Length: 390
Image 1: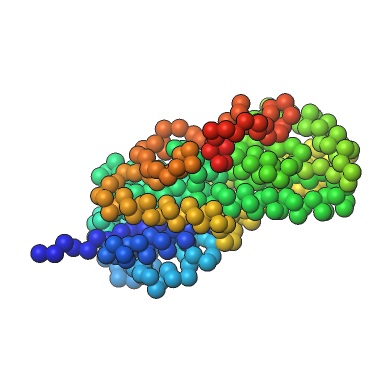
Image 2 (image 1 turned 45 degrees about the vertical axis):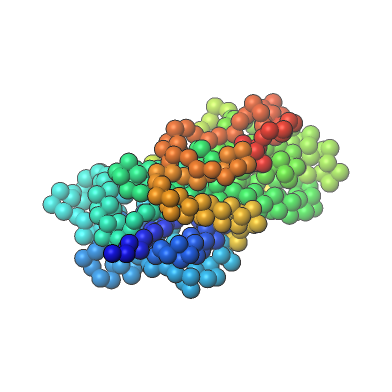
């Protein structure tokens, strides 16, 4: 009796980044070459939470069969055609519990969190998925690690423009985010110089300062503020005043991580916690610009780049990594391996236990890469370092 055709499930979770669609196309094409079928799960883990196998219309809303024709042109654009969410099936709030999962123990008034992992595992079985390839950051992949511990075959692909998944030097989306940031910073110089102002550019990155540090390093900004080092605003004011005065066009440029904080202050958070316990970050750039204007008397430009960093088509490096990560993931599936995450370490493609992501936090190596006294990148000796200095 011939072996049953293997079915691969794929999904994308967390924030969108350029490079997701190319990775998805590569997975589907490679699966076709390997005589595997592919099931796409819509809206990340949310698709597996909200899929109701007893309701025929639910499959169309949350599950999509994928073949070459379905993904033929998706690599030409950014984002993810499967859509995404920040759903965590192990920590579902009252208001997010699907109606068909509200049993006799459901209390709409309770401040409770529900773990629907058994439901997710049941859906994976009913969909006939033999192995799952989730593409996401540390939050999305932390739930993939949970499924691995439950015994379900998982091979993970890291993506996040913050580049902060522990265990890999590189995540899909980071290069394009830095490229966008450098270009926008240089473009903003024309306005800053024309109006003789100090520009403060706030960058995404959550609690890792790498996007601010690398963008500042490549764009040659005057000062950069990162999440790992609280800054003293009076000292910063003196520095940028001198930077502005020494510039023939009488302007200065500053980048700041959204997770940065003033000395003695706190990281600015707002909104409700998401399913992974995180609130939104942002606003420290505006607060810093207001403080600098009061201290220096200079007019300011405050520019948050935010979603512009992660929008649009990927650059060539993110295309390269997306293609290669996808092929590596399919290699592992073909070999019957699971509980792995594809990665780059020291410039070399490899794979590691998915549990690695739970073993630490990836942050800027301040001693090696940052001048605390000058609020600037400090990159002197790069021999033996990875391409992105991690």
